[in-house]
Image (cartoon, rainbow, N blue to C red):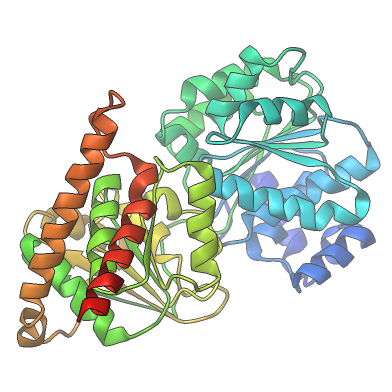
Length: 449
């Protein structure tokens, strides 16, 4: 682990907590220590050791740490402790870039604050806005929101404002700003009291995050537990260089080789995710897609089916690359190389979590060599080549061609359906319907035989 930030305040905080082995040592009250124990949090992580004592001193905090490092607990515990000391409604606002991460944060608030009667509401897109307005009218203690939907409520929900909020938390702040929420974030911050406390957590101090810090934080303490991007030691990483036209063939070959294990496959786009899901289901794999254009209920449904092992393969865009804590993911396959090198770290971080081992495989086509080389520069080493048998993969060529034909026909059908609604794009919510139709067709064919 790299040394903490060179800020004087930060170094003092880090030195004070270096020997702390329990949450009580950090200053966390007994009620919350018990809640941590019930969740299975036996000891604080490095970012929690660095950030919690500073936040409990009522200071603004900038926390720099990688995904899976325990950042959520680093801000939830100080917020709940402050709420217990000074109870009030609309106490804290948490902003996060994706709906899935927002749901996960709300679950943590509910679990840790349940015994104290803490009321937390979720404000994200894809959910009935009228019901959300009713939830906000009850004046909850905690609001966990994505920026776009929260701005909608500020402009449309009568009587709702953020003037009473005492704590603002931005989780994955670099991602929030990279997803072009800068205008929404500025709108939200202008609605808040200047007397609030602010905690900003990010993977890196990007120029946009630095600008946000200067504008909206008051003499913050910076705590950093990793100064460079790195993967955990128990993650085995490799790559395969293959022609773009053979990607689906090698994907099916590898999935057959590794058997019925838990796999997340990352694709670059919504269309690639859905097409690959159709192909794999046609081949008999239990695959399910997850991307940003799906309704919230379908996104949650996909995640829950994967977590419950009803589906062994999750096809996802980068909406699933950060923050999500999905236990027991055995493999991560980068079907498409991520355009941003740092996103690679977040993707492969979905496996080899909590001390477990994991395997990450990256497909590199002739069009992705330069992007992949930037990833190796970031890592500081070259990935080894994943062993494959070309002859065994080529045996699948005919079946893959048939599955790809089916996928193209089905995608055309769905495009035509969405076109009738005035949108020239694939209708996201039809994916599972389409997959289900294919399964039923397959059963009928077997029956005839």
